[in-house]
Image (cartoon, rainbow, N blue to C red):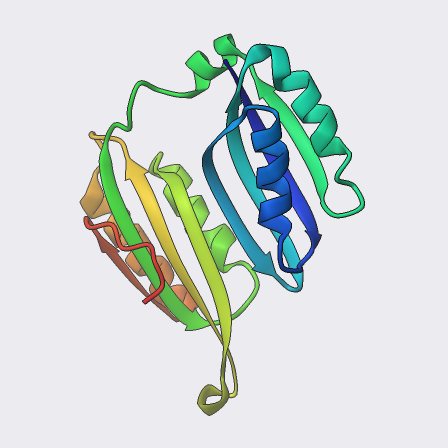
Length: 183
């Protein structure tokens, strides 16, 4: 069995996921994991698909033929690469970070810089900008699911994030529970 990582982008319209799913199914592929979204009038996403080895090349070629509807890129994950990059299971503490504040360039850069310093991985990042007429601008909101190594000093991580929050004038909360969906 081969694992393909497929990225897609195209002008948003109804039926794009069905077009992609049809091609995967026609080649005996099993849709494993995906994150798909409409962003600024574009449909974009990433999908992992398992497909019999003998059909991986024909599936990749068929996906390339969707250029009139979706631009696609297909990467074959080799067994050696998969073993090297995918641990047996998630290790460490699962954390959830919420952030809300006035929008400005660099918020994601600053937050992810602190996370990287503490060797914390981002498992899922969801962001949005919403108008805040009463504040005279826009609000930036982020929900982030994080994986911290077991030996992470969570107090030091929390302090660093709180210091940054004060500097950026944003509200940040860091919790052990997983609530990455927008409420």
